[in-house]
Length: 216
Ligand SMILES: N[C@@H](CCC(=O)N[C@@H](CS)C(=O)NCC(=O)O)C(=O)O
Image: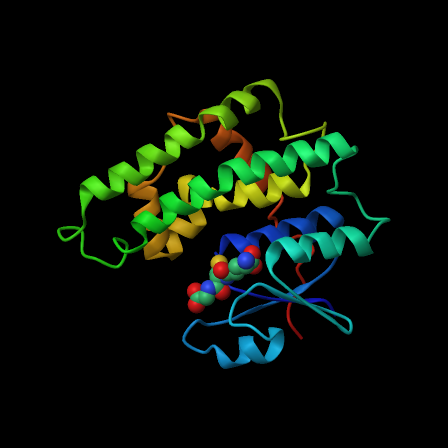
């Protein structure tokens, strides 16, 4: 059976679940623990999840896993844009926007474990403001279309939208995790970039668990 080794709330794991669900591929999940890294390294040869075990194949790195699923399950619904131009356009959007998202999240990372009184409010507001600014063109693009390119969701939507989960954390994640409570309180960008947030939710709606099988 196909098995996903994951941290359930990690955006990179969400990406892979969405791709499996979209393609209708059954899978089991196994929750891994950052305090226990040895089993992760043993499975994937590096200390990060997600890792997909698919028959005799072991794949690591969420984007690589999405490409693997695309290349190997051609009869399933496709997450590959229809044309060369769309692929290049989607890659360009990703290359332009992703570094800003990553930087904003890195800039607040150190504030998350602190108590509310110790947190540097200016730093958090600055990172959030920079993120809002960096998403201006994406929001404008998404006012004209449902998906980054073409007429349906592609892997580029999945990859980019999931990196924005901290800016639109799902209720269940907030209920379960102090990290997401932090993002819920300090990092939501709902009002400033509504089209982007709607699009993130359109993508996350595929994370249904419909094809997730109970572990045997
Ligand atoms: N480029 C990798 C990054 C994977 C990654 O950073 N995984 C995080 C969870 S989102 C992780 O395993 N971190 C180790 C830890 O938090 O202990 C991917 O896209 O899969």
